[in-house]
Length: 249
Ligand code: 5GP
Image 1: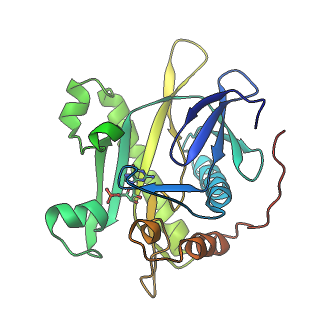
Image 2 (image 1 turned 135 degrees about the horizontal axis):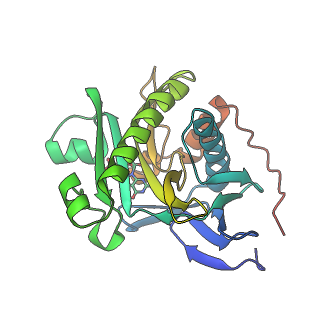
Image 3 (image 1 turned 90 degrees about the vertical axis):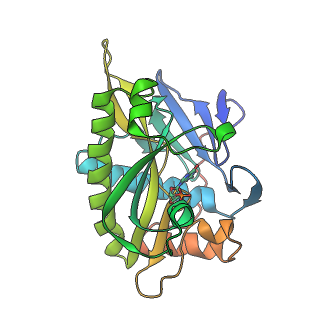
């Protein structure tokens, strides 16, 4: 990794300058954090699984017409992506009540919602990623109205597709978080693409039959078995856990 220029180190990933203009390399770490960095640890092999799962999901979403930042996986822990200007919003979809929604509204986890809810949080660790209403997003010019509509349309399509995708392997997609970015069109404009990652770090996955949690809640809630849970999701999706070890340099 040494000869790459580091752009940013986040909680679960490191971003490096890519080999071509306007590209970046996402390096997936095993580090896990929760509750805004208060709880820290590692989940062995998580980076490899998240890298490969993101590759699979971004590729499938691309095939159904969702533009993404993903270009190709380079190694076990690295993937090449287009560099985008991240919109500082977390787009959260809830199909079933869990987590913050259960806590905020005093609803028991597990209630299936009659229709999915899409909500936005401001991506700001110092503020604890507060929920932000659409009006505030527009008036504070965090995103334009057409961008907001587009993010919601894409998110809705992604949810429809991924619910079926996970259901096919016996997993219920409870909720998830997406991030979008602006990608330059090479002239004066830009268009929105799905960015960041899709993995058990940013979604809730429950086994359909047993209700067992197969995601980062195992780490957040000290349930144990997080390594096995990530591996189980990978196994069901046909993702190889074999270490290929073809690091770039
Ligand atoms: P909640 O708002 O209930 O904590 O989270 C809803 C969903 O969004 C969960 O699947 C959770 O994993 C994801 N999520 C919410 N905030 C974050 C975040 O800051 N980072 C990550 N990785 N996922 C998040």
